[in-house]
Length: 521
Image (cartoon, rainbow, N blue to C red; front, side, top):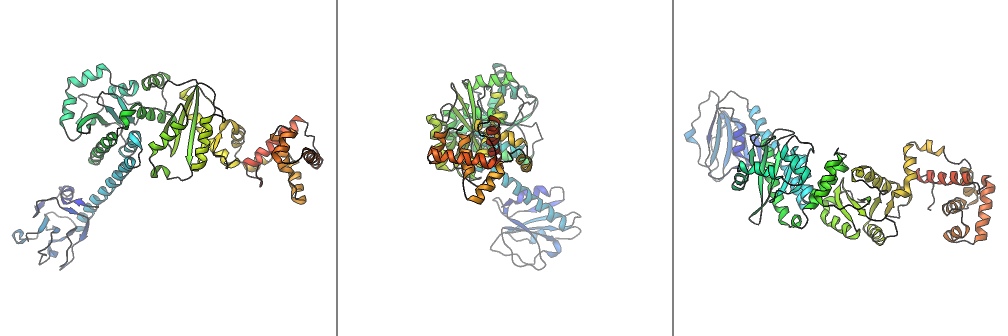
């Protein structure tokens, strides 16, 4: 990691400096070292700091040498310096340790910026799309960011929904600038100013309610949009401006891919859905306006599908937009986003979804082959309830893996009972709700080496139908009848009693949920 010598000079500007630079090009240093007494070996990538009394008697003639010397009350003949010497004299009362630490802070600051640069670049490299890049930038810069195309149509934004700024709310609410907003901007000739500048332009409160940095976005030598960062949650720092410039370059590169042209509404959709998933409070009028603006055409029945990966870092390894496209092709009426390291799809359909649908079968097969797991929520009818049903889809995966890991797609409807059990957090407390005679049957099976527990569960699961149970167990019906009689005798129960049968089925569910059974169903 290199730092320019000029940035170090700026850090030391509070002192009385004399600067003598022998090179015309920018000087970069990689680290700082203390100047040793009688030092004779120097490296051009280092900056040496010491007292003028320690200044070397001779300087290498074949390489540049960078030195900072504290010279308080000490005469130093500047004219005697070598031609390849870059020298900074500090004629102030200050300790060398203080100068050394100040220089180190420059390197530490550069390291922070570099880490943030890498995060922004990685968001682009790993195909997170415009919304993913904007989300990352917001986390790094801590101020609201908004992106529009050349027709003043909203492409993406991130940050607080309720910003006290007319122009921000105009875009967020309507998806584009109103005629009144455009007229106000044009009256100030702001578009011309932005288009003429290569760097971002700082626009204060003389135009907007909230000051902001604005930059044009150029693709193939054409202005295709603009991006703004509002000075809302904190004041801009020099580092923020550096990172914002990089963000502009990355957004330009992302838009050159052309995906935003094919479906610019997609990025607005991602932002809209993410905010509801996050639990942001959005009133119903704004939600309805956004649905119209995005032209979602939601059908009556809504579902949330969440897809989780067995590799926790897969999001960093693959093009996530490619993953979303695959799932949207498999499931008709779905729109996918990346949320909390998972693919989350909102599915809209005119009829109720079933596990027997062709696209659902294809999805289940794809998940199994790809070693991924999916959960489907119950049906709902209002997009504002999305967060609740997203949680259902996540829970269905959690319960499904516990009870049926060989499957890879789970419907929450099948696991409602487990949700009820989950409310009671203690395993010991749940076991207390089990039918007491079940433990007698477990002991009997262990002693006699029989499988009556499996027979009983299969019988209850099949609603006590002899033919279906015998088929599942691959035994003769007479053999099954014999097993049932043995079970009733050992447990001292009557399986024809509805309450008893229900209690036993609930018992199996508790034992499965608490992982207290050691046989497969």
